[in-house]
Image (cartoon, rainbow, N blue to C red; front, side, top):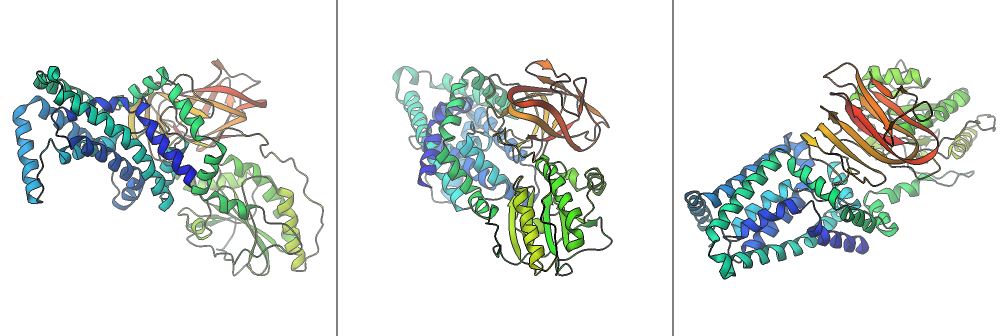
Length: 576
């Protein structure tokens, strides 16, 4: 943990050199023009406090009060604009000064708008709209906060990060304050400098309101890509990644993932009952583990757009068909990753498509998922005839081990079985392919150069020199919590390493059918590179499902480019 805290501190420290903070520096300087000696401290604390609070708690407040988080951004724009006007209009400045003085006096504080509290208000507004260049550490913090998985360790890493950020920011603000208030040459032009900075603040507020500040940040990062490359390399060491995995609670999951298969499979506790199931499919009645006592049960958490689940299904359906007459039952718990996966007709279509004959439970509210403390698709829980979990496995692979465990539990309850194993090609990726990549803001972390994007409609510019395992957007996009929607001239580029590329797409409400044009390294895909859902370089998006875009002979590194017609909802990339 100490190592991760050190890296978080250094990452915050070097943020002052990041192009993504440069558009805010003029506002910091402008706020020190009329400031007292404590104002730089107020600005620094305001930025760091609001950024930390906003990052860690916004998802909780959105769920609790059901409000649009962009309203906070609008609030910040209004405050910054007003402060800019106070630098332009002296009468407005006097009104603000009087207001702050009255408030300060009411609390027994001797302060003004040019002192600590004035700086704190300015800094707090800036912290609401600032999105730093996110490396793996900050991306992990943002992802866990978005999924409401904040714990003491996440808070500690965030605090250390903002302390690192605050030190150089305070030095910068202090130098600016001394420069404008102590230099004789500049002090003669204080009034004119205030007006210039007032205009800068108002223009910056307009840029933030129109989201053009992000365009500027991207252009700066394109011009100076060395910072992002340095940050990714600095934070991607093996030791840091191990610490980040612990934050994500993966260490304990790995411990459970491969319990030894022997004549006495381990006792992993009583299996939780099915709960909160919205609908039962492929069965005439609702099931319970109590009603299944005496049978060996495999619970398979899956969702129909997950490529890892799809590759696992032939084995799961094969085990069911082979052992169902010996007292073996599979229950598929369909827990949707995206909103459209909650539709029963979509799940029924997937059941038919993948020849699933065992019962499937729609766990749309994540009730059973939560009861099992599950975190992954696919996830398999093997339960013996007494209702005890005996083996757990997450992800693909280890099919022989799972089938042997099934056989062991069937023999344990007295069934006679054929010990031959199902022979089927294991398509689990052997190479380290590009990671699953979400295109909604709540779980976005591989967007280049800033890691993620704020919600809302915006015009984006494609980045140059995109690092491997990162993507960039261009044209008009509407970014939502779990997806992004294409607008005019919408384009996406992804620098991937894989053999196959899949993307979850939905036609959207604006149109019944959409189209995506697919390019590889600048050329339209052909019969040797296009996936099974691509015809003549075009994907026809007519259903909510997973689409195969690229299919190569071997895993390779390429630049994928997609051009979208307006109204298509894009959710997540997976690779194989």
